[in-house]
Length: 411
Image (cartoon, rainbow, N blue to C red; front, side, top):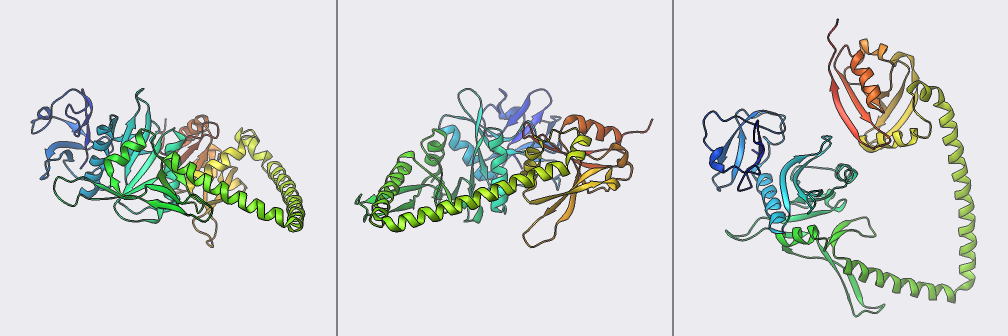
């Protein structure tokens, strides 16, 4: 079930809004014969109904296996609605189940500022997710200028990697949802070098936490161990003041040990020389790699200065370790791309960059074709003779599009 549906004339409907977001009453869609509503994700037919808990929503006529909206759990459904309600109570426009223009993300709740610009996504995350997946999905939002807060019901490793909240159901009817983890304050008393100091997670109503985020009163903060949590700038300043005090004490200790400091400086200078040599070696390796790829870059029509950005984008999107082989005549002179899902595993062929369209007549069905532009995509589409997996990775805009290209009808 989901909160949104599409009507051919009225547009997008949101069951969590009194006017459905289009100026219509709930009675205009609930139990109305002959009304045609469609799922915004899979396009399947939907109907309006009210749950046993009096929650209005839309459900599929036939439940599809691959539609995320159709397969949401009741817990996910309730948390998503609570996030939207909290955002609206804070005075912001919030829409449910909104996808980006490029389709690279779909927010459970998307919040807009006073200028109707999307600026924060609130995600009810109850299914399993790795920390790397969490970072990658957060980066996709950031690429479009949208912040994100992930909300879950149980402690998970990914919560330490991205801005998140661990929440709890109301303990009794009429009570509100509660934040158990993810918001922290810094305490330091007395404010001396020997005073006890540290970050402490706090409990508060979920509505308060959402309001503080949207109003900019709390921000994501990354601790020394890489753990991310929400906190107020004043606490960050207090932690910085404690760090400065500790740094001053360390500086005084170093002054009392001038001889050791000089030796340390010499060691750092030597290490700097080593790093410089390593940097020069890396620069030489990069130039050698560019020379190795010169023929391919000419084949692909890609500037050598743009190639590093393209290669980084491939790594970011895949989330895996990536290595590049040589041009393969067997694959239309495209550049072979190998990936490794986990450390210790072998690299395996995962894709080919810019193969000649003539090579597509007998292309392996699961071998991804990577191209840098819509021009290359058009060439691939025109030459397709079988279903193809294509990834358009634009190194200039940093936008990524994944699609299935169908065979073109023969003349």
